[in-house]
Image (cartoon, rainbow, N blue to C red; front, side, top):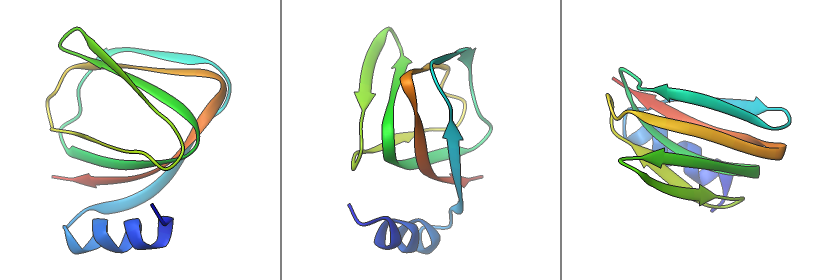
Length: 88
């Protein structure tokens, strides 16, 4: 998906948009967010584990997560760059 079009879509859906970069391998332990997330992976990969199921998202792939969904995040050796929207 085109990042500019995705950003426009996020804004039209009421999301606040930001870009985050995670450098190198990293694991974020179980946590949740007080906001909905919708994000596009621009570079690298992120693996999300929720309810015992893991799914990996790479460049060009979009993922969504509802607020208060407890999950783990893990990143491979190259880390990831993600264009993300947050909506409360």
